[in-house]
Length: 215
Image (tube, rainbow, N blue to C red):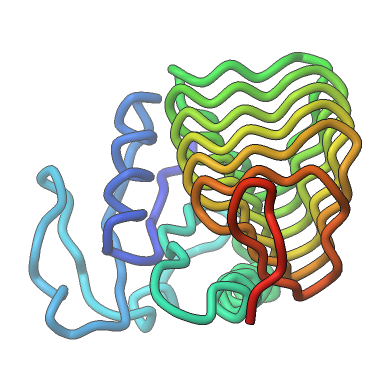
């Protein structure tokens, strides 16, 4: 079985490390662009340094888990940048397999793209399609026949009703709810706690109950 290297060493990487440990996977080390992280440890696994440590690895023998989250401002931009990093790793020959925490529930009728990450307590129902490098975070619920586009994220506690369409690099915030049949455009941002009852245009930002657009 191939060992993993985690790219990133922040909070999201710590959660990914826990996921891999729970799956009894072998994790060689973490990398991070921040020199302040170098030489530190996460649950006994060292942060070896920057991404230059990937150059000596055989892509056929090592798998990559992307531990880069999307915190901070300009969430859609950070989501797109995260997906670009994943694509660059693939061009270098690395595999980024989908990862499912043992405490998540994923229907056998759901489809997960490469690099998709399903965290503890999440539920993904039948017919759902989770895109490449998308994240279904802690306790998020993705109901039947939903589509979560490439690089999109459902934050902890977010809930999508059946047949919801979420575009590439969109963000569904902490505890937000989206009623059935709604479409959310690429790069859109749904704020924490919002209740979405109608379609959201690409790149729009919405908040509130019911959710309305803001600048």
